[in-house]
Amino acid sequence: MDSDVIPASSQSRAVAWLFARPWRLSAFAGFGAFLTILLLTIANAADVAPLLIAPFGASCALVFGAPASPLAQPYNVVGGHLVTAACGLLVTTCIGSSPIAIALGVGIAISAMLPTDTLHPPAGANPIVIAFAHSGRPFLVAPILTGAAFIVICSSLFHRHVTGHSYKLNLLRRGQ
Image 1 (cartoon, rainbow, N blue to C red):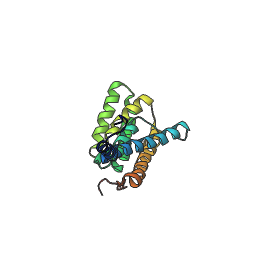
Image 2: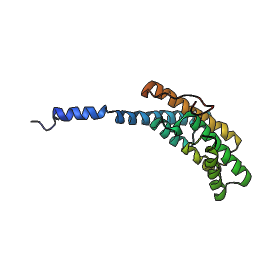
Image 3: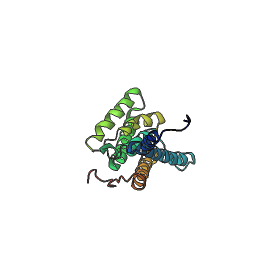
Image 4: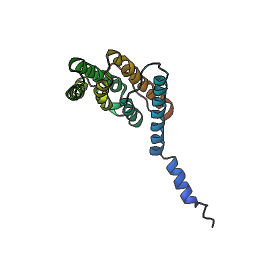
């Protein structure tokens, strides 16, 4: 028997593994995140608008890897990023970018996401980004609002056409 020939039972197990649902979903999640971040990066590099911040990579992990999670819903993604960025801007405007201010910004941001029902863990890093970048109010529009909305649109289209998962695109209130 030739050593390069794989027995039929091993071939069928290998083929079954390749087409197994967890493998496919993992590949789809990674590909969806890749496409979304690639498009944000291209727009960022073309000076269309500053659209890329590190927390968006973590947002993609949620919206593509765990799309059914309450934390990955459109309302949470967009709302969480807006709420935390506003908190970060408020704190840095009032008291600067000291270590205490950065920590206070994150704490206030997390506290603000809970009663607004916009909890989105990646957004908790926005006050840190804002403090280090010395960002101003335009940061709320680009990259925050534009980038978060772009992630939601990309994930919605991707899941609808590739994975079959559908979002309820209601940005006004979660769960309705």
